Length: 622
Ligand code: M6R
Image (tube, rainbow, N blue to C red; front, side):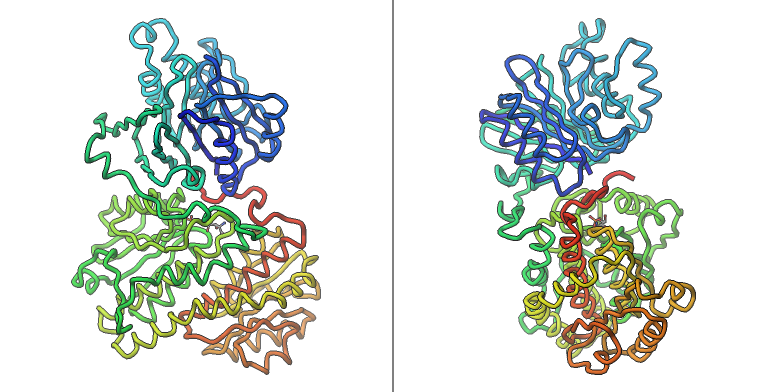
């Protein structure tokens, strides 16, 4: 979704804002803009389209200063255009704001403000906020009461229903940036003689790793010298409490760079061996029969008493949850349900004393997953989240967090987050399975030994991209794909289809292979290739029959086969071999060729897989 960066210090602000905005590109956007405090006034530069156009505009009409705001906009209210791009101004142009989120009562507020004489320049909900602040800041009575921007913002925010992360500056108080958060993520970066705000860590990673994550209802005033934070209850955070809020982000500055890869998506696919290794590191005992998940923070007694698990998530994280269901039911023998977070949160779900809810989210900011967590906690349920971003809202609002150590995932298409989520689910299943007595030491040792082989196997698979690049060339002009799988192969099929559609815009559907005869088989013809997950295992013979059915109807089959399977070569048109591992880990390996296939098809079709149209990296509004 939209991206925010703000800076106050002594350096030239333009490269800081532009580089910061570029680091936020992955969130998805359709226009960009900056506001700079310059000689007692605020200069705006905004452009529809890519940041390169904004840069061009700044070259044509230079601007300079050392305090200001930048924004990438992902349209919700009002089409993508220069007028609708942020920052937005009040009538006088003395107050300028950037905003992520949605003002739900904006029409009602707009009418009210129009009657008071305010004129609007855009179709956005955001512009209302600038005018509301103006109303509080500049109007006679209020101005006489206080001319503080801080007070004016506080009063204005009381009128807003909806979600916001806000950065605000005023030419009347050039030495400060106001920041506020409710429902949309916002962080503060602490520097020396300079401070930052941003919607996400990568925007400011090149300048500081000392981060404060604002909580909902919190309000901050940044100057060059320091930051003042006020809690929702009006209390100032000072001293040790403030120090305790500072997170040292461990990600290296280069982690948010492409490091020689053409796209972040490809870099992140290739980072999976390292990411999986990092996620395992420190969680396995030296004798390799124990998993350590102290961060789970649930007593042995509590784990023994759990009689139902609900996994909730969105998108790729939901697919990881669907695979987690197989792992947990196999290894822990507790019934598991997997729920799309957006559906779950509004269904008045039944959460009992012994229900454990596992929320999965790469970003830790997905609005629906967060909504689901809040719903569960309101019902006194226990939530453990699996999350990649340390300090994110979901991690803070859960009872416990198990972090994936994937490093920053910038590509909109989730890849390394998925395989590390599966790694955590697998570790969790062994951990709980042992506590509940379903897994003995010998089996744990075998399961862990298999997991330890995974990074090396993935590395080997990634070294064999050539075959996939050829396949991408062969299939790049197709307009429809089916992805079929059985058992844990079914969620992998869903994930393969999602990857292809989001980065290449080819229509693709994932189905349980058995469901074919209930409808989708009618689609099969020479123009509808089917990617079939046909790894050796319990359901192998059945999937072979499905392949025969497709071939008999003139369809083309790309099969994912277990290494050494000669039979499939005779039946399928194309075969991609997947090394053997245990059934629970097979999705981690099977998804690798599907990620690569989606990536290369997208690139060969001329699509930019890092910034797919209409998509945002983290969906922070409903
Ligand atoms: O940050 P989250 O894991 O909560 O995000 C969930 C989905 O928005 C995300 O997985 C999305 O589906 C990706 N674009 C998939 O590649």
